[in-house]
Structure formats: C-alpha cells, structure tokens
Amino acid sequence: MSERLLTDIGGLPAGEVPRQEAPPLFWQRHMLAMFNVLWGKGVLNLDEYRRTMEEMSPDAYNKSTFYGRRLDGMISLLVEKGLIDRAELAARTEDILRKGTRDHAA
Amino acid sequence: MPPDRHATYAPGDRVRILDLGKPGHVRTPIYVRNKVGVIDHYCGRFENPEERAYGRVGRARIPLYRVRLKQRDLWPDYEGAAGDTLVLEIYDHWLRPA
Image 1: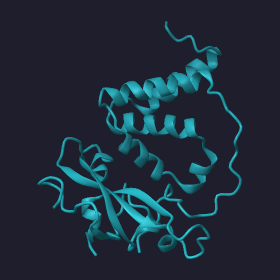
Image 2: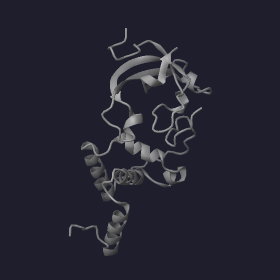
Image 3: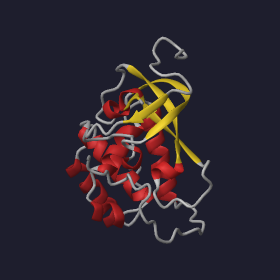
C-alpha cells in the first residue's frame, strides 16, 4: 500500500465546510496574476505547483491558505529554478515592510 | 477496438486500477486503487504529470481514460442508489485488463 499524499483526502471525514464568500485581497489578485503569467509563459507548470504543496508538512499545509500555498509554491519553484534568490527576496521584503509601503517602483 | 493506435483500452473494457506504490506527484487517489471499473471514454494523450511535476516537460504523451466505478465498490457503507457511479481520469500505466 502506498503512502497517502497530503492532498489525497477523498473519503476522509471533512468536518464543516465554510460557505461564506471571501473576496480576494489586492495582494492575492496581484499574486495570482503573476502566477498565471509564469504559467502561461511556461516558466512553471501546475503539476510542479501541486508537487510543492504535497511536499509541505501537514502542519504547515493546514495552517496555510489557498493563496498562501500558491505564493509559497511559486516562490519555491522560482528558487528551485534559480530565477530568484531567497536571501534577496527576504531583503527586498524587509525593505518594503520597513518603508511601510508597497510602492517599490524606485 | 481501441479508439486510436495509441489507446490500449476501448470504451466498455473492464480494467483494474493499480497501486503502483510510486512516490511523488501521482494522480491516482488511494481510494480507487485495486478497484475494478469500466472504460467510459478515451481522453487522448497527455504528458505524464508524474514527470511534469519535476520540470520534465515535453516528454512522451500517454493515453488518459475516464474510468467509471460503482460507488458501492468504493465505499463499504455507501447508502445511495445501487447504480450510482463515479468517473475519474486515470493514465494508461495505472490500468490493467480485468
């Protein structure tokens, strides 16, 4: 018998399924647009993205969200492919947080 | 007759879904493994997601089928109608004739 993937939950008890609308926030729209461009240009593919989710620890997976997992997966793939650097990303994020603005055109 | 020269199975063929015990990004859910169903539809050929998930794109395209299974075969405590079925897409290498 094979090991069950984190995402292979068919038939398991689901608990309560929340039904309320959750309109996406600005960063979520922005991030999905970026993901779709990378996907459309063939930089990454959906199977790779799903694999990054399956590689998460169950705890990290459950504590994250749809958009959180998408962002983390996109970052992992870009790092894996050598297109961005984690230290550089952290420094840039730190800089934006310090300035308290998302205006980073400069 | 299989629908094209690449297809191993034709609609109506009985198949068993295998448990390949393969690690990684596999698309055959645990609950259908070792179950017997019927080929419902041949979807054509697609690159193997088990390869694409690791960045190996542009490789061989393999046949994909919709396989119909009886809900009562999947869930021992199923309370719906006896004729209820589930259809899901399974790649050729996860099937064998039954």
